[in-house]
Image (tube, rainbow over all chains, first blue to last red; front, top):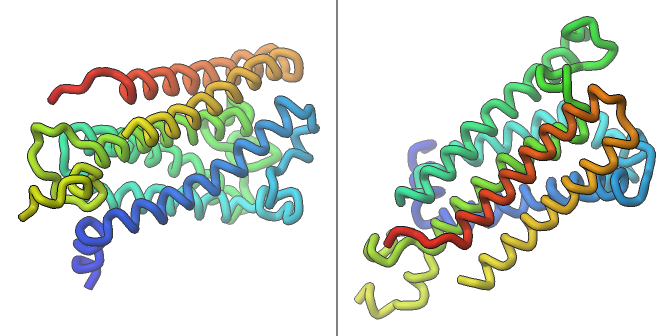
Length: 185
Length: 62
């Protein structure tokens, strides 16, 4: 059953799955971008800058579980949908995004572990990831999200517009295919 | 094709802009050590954005 689901998500439903995945990624980005705007442009104190949803529901920002959940969804999405990227360029960029997200997920796993065990690493007063030993959390997450998102979106672009020489693309995500239905006849 | 490329590019430009604003902000609001670390990752983020734009608009092998 899982194999069938995997095949469907990377075949007939790859486009739909990517749209849903992108919607989740953009919703998450909206929160982080708003938070950065609140701090860097509007001059809000960092603890008060919680994005839009976090402004009304602070637990969304303070909950390590929610952050870990998103990191896990990202990792799973990048892993599960990778098989649908059958070209050279699109698969290479998607794999880069997956690799970076794997490390990002490990960082969140460490944070979540400290929260669950009630024991923080390095004698810190709050759960701390490895990179957080040096880099403040807001900037670190802006960085992580950027370096995962950019290869991911480049992969999606190459997937939507594969090189003409590659022949007729197999995936419905490819715009060439939609624009030239006669080719499939 | 260009519409999609422009949309992605605008988003990347927003990311670069916010990272640049962060670069300025960290210099005034964080300790020297924190600011250096923040600026390092923000600069890497900006560079990733520029590399992304380069691949998005660069000539591709057929």
